[in-house]
Length: 194
Length: 343
Image: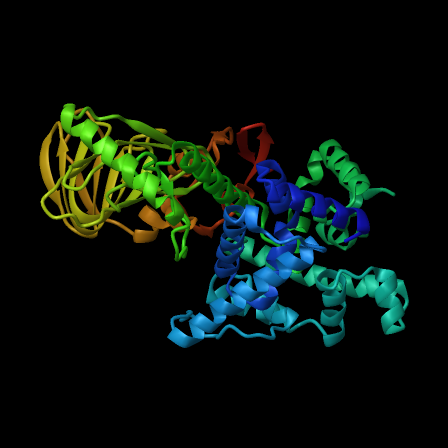
């Protein structure tokens, strides 16, 4: 995020403190997707992530008059969300109530591969995707993670891995071709894309 | 740069297209919006590219994001009402549910509310009680949950209108429905819960069931999940047992009772669309109800019975699958989708 975005979110935050609905929804819309992908890194269940983000914004609105002054709004939201999600995990572990079809436990450290797989809604599709992802070489997986998860440019990845940018691009392209095959398979099977 | 030869993989690998997708740079957003507008023939590839990026960026797909935004807007609307009227549940029966909220954030309103409820009660004891109907309409492309005053829960499918009235303990509850809804009636011994859905009346005691009023050529359909309900139609009364579905074609014809597939009948609550050997008319009725799009068959053939299951999908996915199986192709013209034979 660049500086002007940060300054704008600071402004929205001030207006939120004054109870400005429009500013609040603007902040919601601007930060939703980054909060969602951040949340998916902490908690494996996408419904829990969605519910927790919703709850967080409900709380922010209800307490808007008592919100603290915040230097970096996005960092504040990340911390807020993370704290809530970790509390969810603690509750789930305590009550053993988090029983899922695949009986996998929410984990603190998920690999990018796990996170991709977890987005699928049912066990069968998750297995299918895992099957496809296993066809990627570790190098390809690392490169798409740097590109899409860490948000680096081809130049930056090439610099870090001591490769030609063209090679990095080709690795990404091959990975995308494979994922597309997987999407085509889902389409043929009449399974939905979440 | 000639993008007209681009495939989904090329778009998804393109850094400018990524910035458009992430909506992070105005210049790229402007460029790609314009480019896509001028190249409708590339729509399929662009959609697949976005689906690839949804996954890789771990993003929430557009329609799910929209559902979340609507959930937030409903919450805001509710708070606004609560603040203006200083009267929560009693005055605003359409409490849209917030899952997993553990504390009532309205607690601080308790004192003025108690006084207001007392005042309202006195007023109602003096007056004969007229039913004040209130109405809640769910637009196309949206699902929502309404909590009624008596604790019952109604999940509304897209394009559905629910009418309800104020309720106090001991009252009977009357509901009018136009569209499709799933009811979870809270058990309240000794009082009636009656749903009027077109020509059919449904009387309930603590139960859950799905009601679909006639639309787009499809008949009334009432599916009972558990409990027991009595149906009253111009043709007479019938008791429905769990896992039975009653279809009523209208005009006083007898009810057809049959078993049903739970996901086919009630899956829409979880965003599941499922068909078993469905006719083109049934598929078209669901698309119209859910996304307000009209299917027009210009292929000159009657497609075979269609079987498929989709979870929180875009309609493009359904159409592609449907066309693939029936060797058709489709073109989008505004809200109308035309099916033709593959060239």
